[in-house]
Length: 110
Image (cartoon, rainbow, N blue to C red; front, side, top):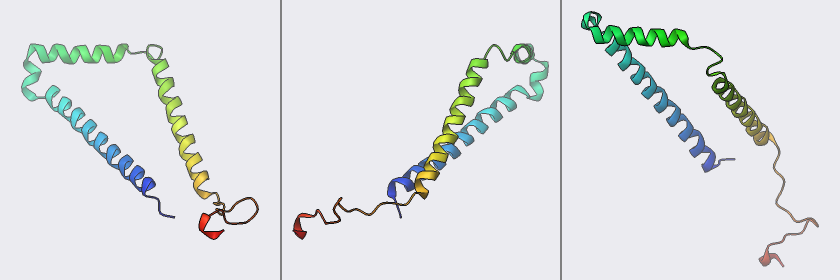
């Protein structure tokens, strides 16, 4: 059965995912291009910035942001479980709209 809300939800999710991916790639590419300019190799500030980023990247330990990683993994598991539950619900047979005695409850049928 066609449901307009399901179409809207899946369309919105697809558009938002594509948009977020494009923005993230543009952001990362902009930083990469800016930090790897040929003339930046000889400038003191760029060398200092690159060294700073490398040192902090090497100092990151799993224990320093392990809780954040645990939250991210937990949220991903919850997302997969909710997606799986939606698939199960959509495969369930839908009951017929009737009253408990089998009679119609519509006012015009009385």
